[in-house]
Length: 83
Image (cartoon, rainbow, N blue to C red; front, side, top):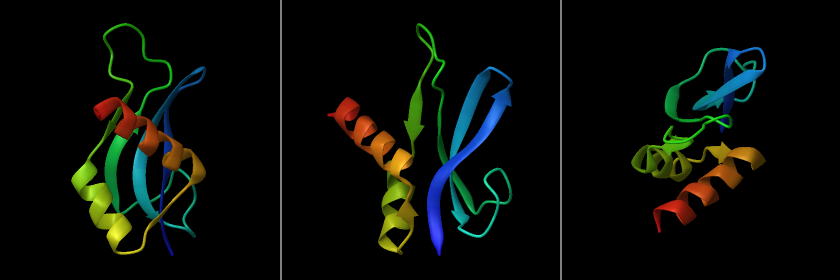
């Protein structure tokens, strides 16, 4: 099964997450199929907090990829921000 989930990066105490499409059996920060965007929870000021490639997200959901609950929340947050 293919999932859309977060992959952690950044340094200790300063997380940065990539939104990736990966096989469910692969570890969290391991191999992934495609990077769809990022989420920076510690963004300040003019820094961009969230970016998702909507066209690729629509494609992957169309072929059956399931978003994790956290990614689902971020997708809704991005849609509200865009509207």
